[in-house]
Every structure is written in C-alpha cells, then in structure tokens.
Length: 204
Image (cartoon, rainbow, N blue to C red; front, side, top):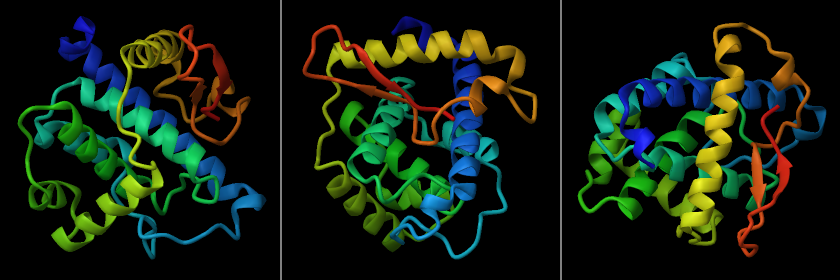
C-alpha cells in the first residue's frame, strides 16, 4: 500500500497501534475472567517500565523492516489471540509479543532482515529468549504466516478508517470509542471469503 511509505502515515500508524494495544492490555489486566490465564514465555515477572508507545517507536527506529511488516505483525497478533484465547494480550506480555510479531513479519515479508540477536538487542531481551519467543509464536499461530493480498488490504482499510476516526483522541487518556468494544484484539476476518466480511471488531 503506497500510503505506508509516507513518514506521516507511519507515524500515525505507530501511534494508533500503540494506543490500541495499550487499551487492550489495560482492559485485559482488569478483566476477572483473565485472572487465572495461562502463563507463557511471553509473560514477564513484572510490567515493563517502558511504555508501549516508546517500545514500538524503538522497534520502528531500529528494525529497518519494510512498513508493510507492521500491518503483517498486526495481522499475526490478531491471529495469535484468536488461536490462543487463554493467552490474551496484557501488560505483562504485550512487549514481547510486539517484538516477536515484528521480527517474524520481517522474516516472512522482507528479502533482507536482521537476525534474532539483533532483534533481541532492540527488544531488550537475550538472544536465547528471543529464540524461544519466536518458536512459541510460530506454534501459537500454527505457522499460518501467509497474508493474502485481500486480507492485507482489508486490514489496511480498517487501520486507515480507525486512524481517521481516532486521531482527535490519540492523546486522550480515555476514549469512548475504545471502552465500548471488546477486550480481544480487533478484527476477525474470515480469510476464506473473498469479501473478507468483518466478523468481529476487537479493540476495546
């Protein structure tokens, strides 16, 4: 999508994704049904002190992957939450899920990409941990990494529409547009249907 090459568009996309993930994580932290959720390799012992916005900005600055990788990473996170309902995104795992999804997207989408050791350094974790995260993420997705063109553009269209609506609220602490939604992730497209009808909107 040509618009993704625009620095202004990418800046808005990073801000929107950060805001979305922050609200999803906070909502799931408070959801009683997730209090006994399964602990995975993505969970930290404590909440990272670095904000999701700062962390994603850091990834964007140093990963040097194509801009479409961030849309693909978003698709992967959506698939992961659908395939692993016992592992909802929260404040303890969102950072590790982010760095892993971007790295996997870069490996699948780009001809050239950095190795796991580099992404581990960007993400502030060890290479060994990065390797474990990658393996668990791939198995969690069922190795379903292919993003069909129709699916990619459907997610792009959704993101574009949401960014346009949410722009006035990105700097607000709370937004009624988010609090009115579910606490899963955002979209659930049926990729077997050419029209990719939206089955569910997640966000918050």
